[in-house]
Amino acid sequence: PRATTNLITCGDRFVCPLFMLQMMKFAWDNYKRYAWGKNELRPLTRNGHIGNMFGGLRGASIIDSLDTLYVMGLMDEYNEAKEWVQTSLDLNSNGEASLFEVNIRYVGGLLSAYYLTGEELFKNKVVELGEKLLPAFNTPTGIPRGVINLGSGTSWSWGWASAGSSILAEFGTLHLEFVHLTQLSNNPIYTEKVMNIRKLLNKIEKPHGLYPNFLSPVSGNWVQHHVSIGGLGDSFYEYLIKSYLMSDKTDEDAKTTYYNALEAIEANLVQKSPGGLTYMAEWRGGILDHKMGHLACFSGGMIGIGADDGAPEKRQHYLDLAAEITHTCHESYTPTKLGPEAFRFDSGAEATATRLSDRYYILRPEVIESYMYMWRLTHDPKYREWGWEAVEALEQHCRVDSGFSGIRDVYTTTVSHDNMQQSFFLSETLKYLYLLFSDDDLLPLEDWVFNTEAHPLPIIQKHLENHLSFAL
Ligand code: DMJ
Image (cartoon, rainbow, N blue to C red; front, top):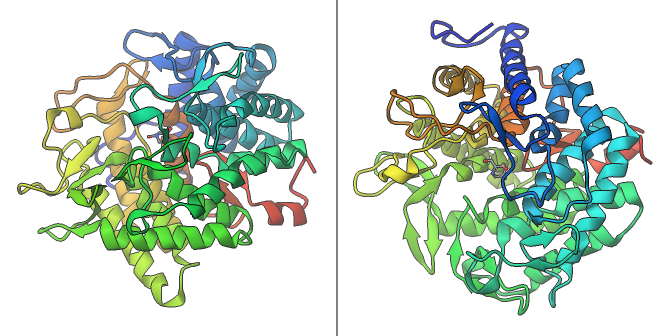
């Protein structure tokens, strides 16, 4: 079935997830037909895209799809993906990779595939890949650099990052995967590497308790005072609360760091617009930029899942804050019912992109991700209604003959497509939509945490106690 505009809201527990399954199958079939083995599908030109983020690794859409296909029960497609991993996933590449992207998509994707299916193949591959990432940590401080050559192990910083710095959201988004790499390999080195990052961050001075986005891997000092819950900062905060949850609530250090960071964010970045919308501004050396990125919209879900473990007098407040941020992000989804890359709250703007260059939507998941978490936490039907609006909009504006494409301007219904079906559309956007419309016992939040690419990882203690592991 295809979503139709007269289906305002999707309330049927069987039919609604089926829509998402059909969307996934359509995205997958077209990737398979036109871009098999490449990283992403270009749906208009009907070819594959390789790009330069994964250091010569291929099949990003396959690795990112494994768990989504499996969870949806698309078993033929899952088996095709598994077979490709077996026969064609070549880890002996020699290119320049983003440590962060390889970690969240490839390591995360293979870990989830292993934990969901118990197939040794995924475990062997992920441990082999994990080893190749270790040289990135060979810096004076142990803070990894952003780029690594997977063959030679040489690493360096992004050319665009000021003064050879490493990025908070990159070196701060390794913890979940690396703790699981230690679990699977019985090698403590992965956990040691990420604990060392944490130790350094605990030690250094934080301006107003905030974490700037750029840090020198040589001196261990902040390079610039730009703070953002969106791009460059985002998943660092996400991994603090998720590290606590994934440890079966035993990692007290992660918990304390998360709530302290959240207090600093509330004190310095959370704002209310003249129109009454709550948003996260960006902070540049004490000066606020009243802009919120689409990426920052994940924070509704993050604050939501952390609400219950906050101080008792703060719990309702955190849940309210999570709902307000999610509401603001929904407000930005207009008039196509898809949202811009960044929206502003100054010069009369209320959650609108004021620059032409911010108006694009590249099939990102963050707003839908927050709907999914807020639905699970509150069961307020509005989250499913909002999710359904997004499904209709994706069908209307992003579906093309041979896949799904991002669009260049969310403010015009005369759509211009960007010709890219991002791999996170398969791993995150469609998975979160599927979960939004499924029962809560599918990947229950009591047992799983999702990495920042929506790959589910089991909570460690529970998973040991319940003998869910195929590895241990
Ligand atoms: C994904 O790769 C991850 O969600 C990451 O944390 C941020 N960017 C994309 C999706 O927008």
